[in-house]
Image 1 (tube, rainbow, N blue to C red):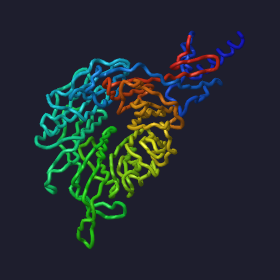
Image 2: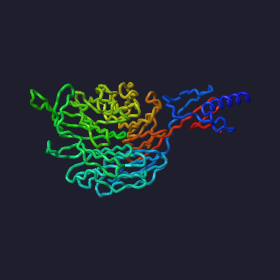
Image 3: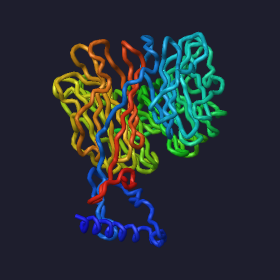
Image 4: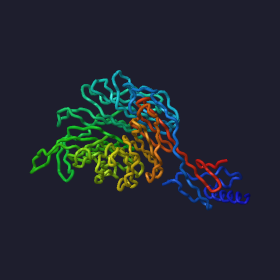
Length: 517
């Protein structure tokens, strides 16, 4: 036995000497460390070290801490939103007609008492939260001017304090709604729908507008109308001139100085015939516009889908130069047989590949959610192909060129809706609400090999029959996953999950790269 232990120690010393030759000259060796920064594609990867030793990285189970009631059992609480940066986690939620924020500074272990963000006596709703470094941003719709304005607050000290409220729309008598918020570095973007009358389209109708800040939200540039009054484009092999007159549901994402916006676009469509413009029909479409310089200028708008059958709810995700858009489309078939369509760009949104039908089932597919990480993109949606409502997921590891077959994550004979997907490296997390015994609970499944396999589902709400849980949102960062949802009996709820990683060398066990004593 002593001889075997001595052999192991000699081999370990040789391996460490090869990794750290200068340190090995010292009389007393420090604790051996395993190299970090190695990309591990799947659980149980074996790595050969100099000296003939092998170590294996093993991922432990995902364990969840106790639930946290963010809103203090307020029954007037609606769907929460999450953002995280470093060890800080932020949750916003409407409570009794006002917007509140709860902050954690210990990686989601505990939360401070909620802080009120909205400051008027009017109803506040449709909230968004984003974080980048120490900057935290909150935007919402406030009915202070009756028809709705877009209000904004920011913090530059990790949520310790917030500046005064800013009215970004400031449009008395006009309706502002459907706000979307994104941040990257010191750039922050707020997009929304607003009723505007422009020179070429004097009737006040919904337009998608945006304001950008390049100094952490301290100041904002002028309002930019992202809708083009007239656009000539070849779509579906038809040259059309589209007078855009109704827009809705913008979504904005950012990466560095690049910002991407998609929205639903309604339009009467005209065709060029013998040099004359003649109206053809009324169409719905998915519009896209991008900026590569922090929102200082935008490229021309692009219609990613224009047909009488496009329905909408477009979503967009970005990872470097990879831009992905997904939406719901009936593909010319009657309502009730919608599919989830997808288009990808690998050059920052300059051009998009042809649309891919991700669902392609004879039943209804709807309410998709999309997430991008590296060259991976993951899309989850509700599908009724089995009769019940199930949560399906497809993943791609090659910038959206090819997708794995659809995986039914719920598949339990019960209705499952409202998926939320997040990715962190090779880890994918999907949460949804599931009908159980007359009420809804929140379930979560995760994969540690970019969707190759998923563990068993975990019920993270688990309130028995005291109330229903709805509208989950999930964020995966590092070894942590944060989930929040609305509970009709308790308010805005939150739960944190964590996983451990163990590295093993024959004869020794190392955790976090340091040998156990």
